[in-house]
Amino acid sequence: MSRTKVLPIPVLGRHAVNAYLLLGSRPVIVDSGTPGSGRRIIDRITEYGVDPADVSLIVITHGHIDHFGSAAELHRLTGAPVAAHVADLGPYRGGRARAPYLPTGPMGRAMARRKELHVQAEPFEPDVLISAATSLEDFGVAGRVMPTPGHTAGSVSVLTDEGDLVAGDLVANSFMGLIPGRPANPPFHDDPVGNLASLQAMLDLDPTALHVGHGAPLRPDRVRRWARREHHRLARLEAAGRLTTRAEGRP
Image (cartoon, rainbow, N blue to C red; front, side, top):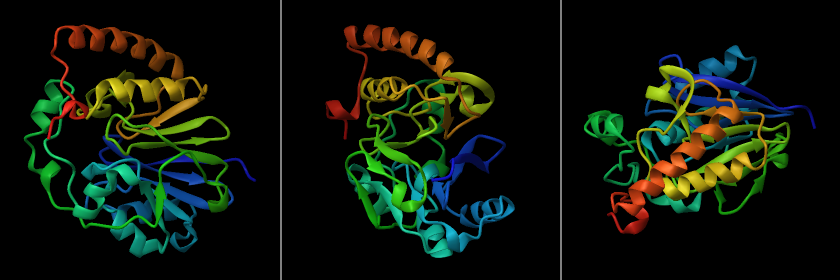
């Protein structure tokens, strides 16, 4: 199978919200951006020389509106099946992320009030349900979809055989990508401790780069150093009883 290229598809700003195109022997799209982004994504993959009818699969990394918002539209435009994790079926079938969003810091608290995060997206039913590590070989990409719960219960990442990790919102660039190369939490996590465990599990697989939903690619060594600091920060919050997660019963 041919070497897989990972190509960014900026959906909002230069890197504020990203989808990705995986080019192997057949093309795969990862994430679909906000509602109404389908045509923009199609235009970009066409610029990369891909016929939309050749897309073999659309992988959705998790049930937040900026990642699944145009899944139904992309499905219609390409005819490709949509793959997503069974644990986020509620948002996909309802067209809304689980509420309330659980902020990771001041930016998340500010963003949680923005109406764009609470719009109704077009619902969809995944054609391929993910519940465990799943090979993409049948779809023309040398790689696997890996469950990485924590950001949401149904979060997944894609790891190519060459070591590129398309990481969704496991980690982000600081300030939604405004400070490239600096690892940070995205604005929200349902379960920060669980997400950090998933991130560490992916780092243990020695990825060569982390391609994230918000910002430019991140170097694994910088993410490892950040993850160690984040582990200590979360431990302090947990010890003080100040770490609330959806896993602890938040509605």
